[in-house]
Length: 116
Image 1 (cartoon, rainbow, N blue to C red):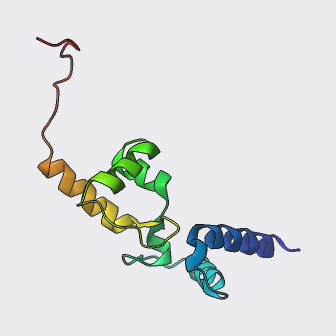
Image 2 (tube, one colour):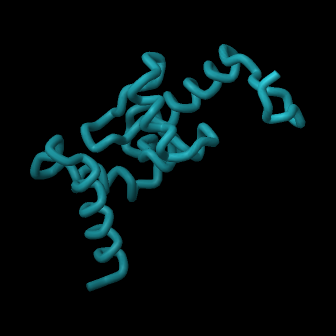
């Protein structure tokens, strides 16, 4: 088996697992083909734009557990693009910008961790 074929099979396995029940016979293969085309642009919802919970956490600067909390409790948090819990990176970045403009600043750095 060539290295390229091995990579293709690994990608198809991961994509099929992430899509779960939403994957039909050719979905994983079509998505992997799109990934391997290496398009320089990634419109929202395209396969090149999809990220998992760890990717969302990295963009937002939080832990993966916090991503699950946002998804459950924040009505402004973008819905996953797939049943396999993949989000549009573009929508997550827009959410991050919105959060930065609407959140209160919290406790100032260096403030004591005691109640007054």
